[in-house]
Image (cartoon, rainbow, N blue to C red; front, side, top):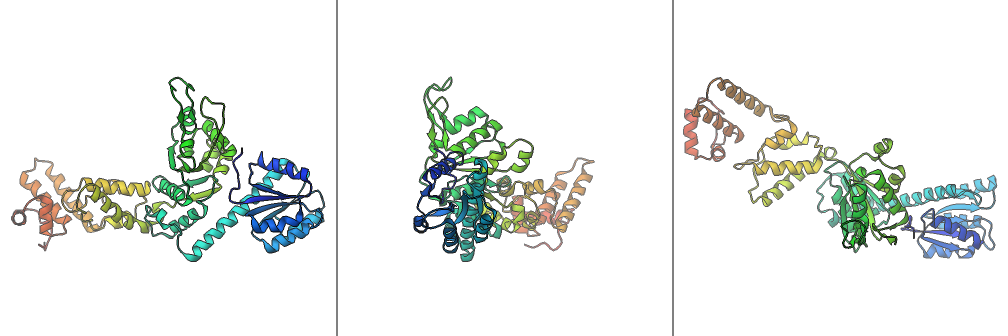
Length: 481
C-alpha cells in the first residue's frame, strides 16, 4: 500500500462515468501515491460531501447530468474558497478552459492528458492547498501572538522574533504525516526542534533518533529495517529495525546530507511506498512512523555536486524548518550565557562565579561557528578550570583570539605585564619578581579590590597588603579594599 501524500485532507473525484473514476483513482493511488480519496458519480451530492468531509482538492468533470461541472465550479468557488478545483474534462475547447480558469479553477486538463502531466498538475495543486493551510495556521498564531504549546519549546531559550516565528511554523506542521526537513548549522538545536515536533504531534509512539552520518549501505539498511534470523553470518536471532521501534511515533534521521547515494535510493523508496523489507525477508512491512530528517549541509549544493538525489530532496522538503544561527540572534547570547553558567555550576557542584567585565560584550561580537553548542562548551570549559570566584577567560580567549574585543585598559595592562616578563627571560627570575607579577595580575583581575585579589592568590588580605608595599611593580593606583 502506498503512503498517502495528502493525509491532512482528501481528494474528491467527481465524474458520472464510473469507469473513468476507477481509472483516475488507480492512477492517483498507484504512481501518484494519493490514497486518501473519495469518489462521487452523482453531481448532486458534491456540495453535501464538501460540507461533511475535509476536502482540499476536487478533480471535476464538466459534462454531467443533473448539475453541470461548470455550475458546481461556481458554487465551490463561492461557498468553499478553501477547496482547490482542477477541471478534468473530455472537452478540448479553449473557450471552455478560459471560462473555467476565470471562474477560479486551478487548472484545466483534458482526459486524454498523459499520466505524467496529470500527476504533475495534482502535485502542484496539493502543494498549493498545503501552503494555504500552513499560512492560515501561521496567521492565526501571529494574530494571537502566542503559542498553543509553549511547553514543547521550554528547552530552547530565546527572545528572538525569528525563532518565535519558527516555533509557530513548527506548531502548524507538527501533525502532518509527511516528512519534515530541519536544516541549520551545527549546534543550533535541530534535535530540540525535532523533539518539539514529536511532542506537539500527539503521537503515542516514541521519538527514535538515528545519526546516519558515516553509515555504509548495509549498516543503514540493518539499522532502519532490521533483519530476520539467518539474514547474514552472525544473525542468530531476528532484530527489529528503528522503523519498527518508532511505530506510532517519529523516526528522526540526523545528518541526512551525509547519507550515501545507495542508501538515499532506499530511503526514497520507503517514503514513496510506505513499505520496507527487513534484511533476509521477502515479506514487506508497512511503515507506521512519521519521518523527520535534519542536516547541516547545503542540500542544493550537494545536488549540484551529484551527492544528493533531487527527487529525494523534494520528497523531504515538503515542510522545511530552517533554524536561525546564533550570530543572527545576538540578543540571545546573554540569556543563554546566564542559563548555561548556572547549569554548569550546578552540575560541577560549584558556586556561580563572577563574570569578568567585558566578556559578554566580546562574545556579542563573536560569530559562534559552533552556535549554541559552542557557547555551552566554552562556559563549561571555563568553569572547570576556574580557580577562585572569577570565571576563567582562557577558553574564550582561545576561541575569539587573545585580547580580541577585550577592553583597551585590560589589553594595555596585559601587554605591559608580558613585556616585563619577557625582559626577565634574559635572566633567571627570582621568586620575588614572579610573585610581584602574579600580584599585579590578581589586582588587575579584581579591579583593585584587595579582598578579591587575596582570594584569587590564596593568601590573606594583610599578607597581600604587605606584598603590595614591597612590590617593585605598581599594579594599580588607588587600590581598594
